[in-house]
Image (cartoon, rainbow, N blue to C red):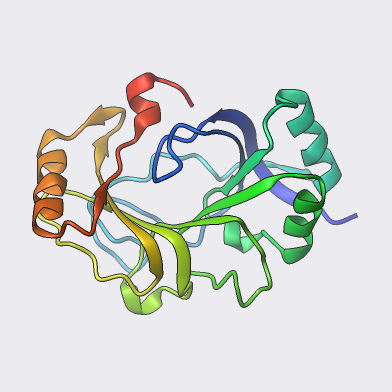
Length: 206
């Protein structure tokens, strides 16, 4: 039986992007191919620290994940695959299994893996690049979302999407006012972009 390394599973409101406020199961896979930090480097865009623990985990089959979802909230039929980088583990087989079980499937990915080339079918793709644009392998998504610290310019996305969003960097759980004002300035100058804030931090949910 195939298993996946899962860091955690929980049910909460989506806090970011166009789908903010919707109820979802979050399936967080262990592992990432980047190391985001304030300092720019080959595995980090710089400007913010990664605030997610994704190193630990447990091996779970698709059936075991499904049982946990049904136990957590049988009324919720939305899944967001996240990480770390979920594209490292998400397969067409796993996506097909949950579609067949009646779930709407979304993903939050850094875009370094071409999900389409891997045959993965999803209902919503959030691409939040953490690498230079030439290293982004995912070419289309539902939305692209970039974290911006003070002074960082408007992105020029390689990945094409209907919705384009910038999100101010946070200092832990506190909003960085300078980053927020900077993102608003970017949108004033580039009105095809939208502001995305980490709503879950304001309302204090997972």
